[in-house]
Image 1 (cartoon, rainbow, N blue to C red):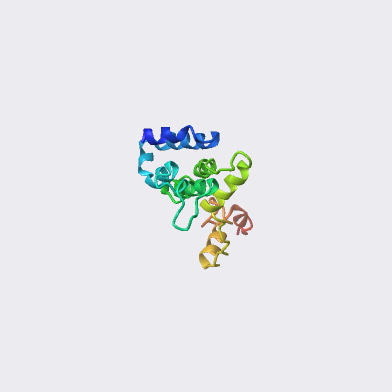
Image 2 (image 1 turned 135 degrees about the vertical axis):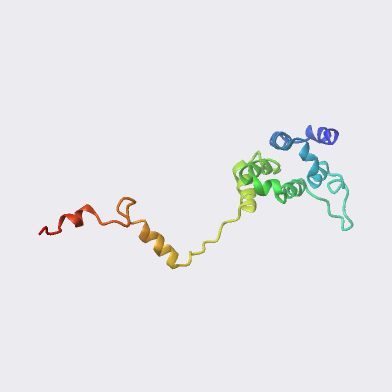
Amino acid sequence: MRGLIAAVFDRLTGPQQMALSQLVFQMGTNLESFVEFLGALNDENGIRELPLLDGYMETDTEHWRTVQSTLIDSQWARRYTVRAATVIAMFDANYNQAPFTAEQRVEAILRPPVEYRPKPRSSATLRVASYSKHSAKSHGRKTAHSQGKRKLT
């Protein structure tokens, strides 16, 4: 693995080198299990250099989107979304020009907006609300105020 990464490392931009360093730091030898990511990073299938049957060649931007997508689809990204969004965004070909935009794009994929669903009303909600109005001291007992109004005979 070190040989594959070392061969590519010098060709990466500064942010991409930082992202790869972060991945190695966070995952250590577990990075070896990211086979698709390493394959895309090293361009093992030659998509960037060799035209496909239809004559189409992958652009630099498309290549880095492919690299990003291999990480976005990982369990690591779903578990550590904040950290992953930053690291994955650094692999964007245009990260130097617009880092905030790159991070927003990745965050939108990792953490899609949550749909608002109103909570159904239930009797349990009403009970909880009514219990919260009583203090712990007076719950279940008569208060001193009500006992003071009693007539003594």
